[in-house]
Image (cartoon, rainbow over all chains, first blue to last red):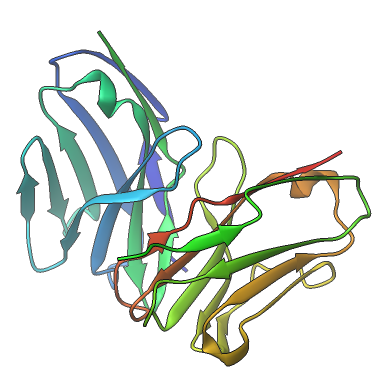
Length: 110
Length: 113
């Protein structure tokens, strides 16, 4: 089965700085990669996703890049704000299943 | 659009007792998932339904966990008897099909004491 590794496990940045979270996957058949944000006590919510036929996708301050050759994808958050503080999960999809990373706790310091 | 509904939100039980969680997916979503999320970890798939059939239950501890999705809509997850290590958030999720975006419910927080 697929194995998704996510780094770092915790990330602390100053407000206004950029944050980057990276995930690697093992199965080249994986073709869809969503990112979820989970605030404390809340449900995970989809913030951005990318399919394997695209190298980069952007939505305002959030972007995701995908390198199929190296089998990794990254979440980029620019101009971070305190409300970006949360746990972020990556996932990889193949053969009707989603495989989740272990999460990154992002702390944005005002 | 209404989201995935779960109940109860919080439950505290003693070990060896039983508990049941209920989930109502987004209308029209054929695929339903139950995930277990232990504090500080990512969601772990327990069982995946396609309509009312089981697609994957390879990580469901079948000696104590059971789940059903009668009529292909609502689902229940039962734990009997509970162990201390079952303390976790049980997330129900649904998607239009197995290849589509997953939408999560708020979760049912279980504490086993």
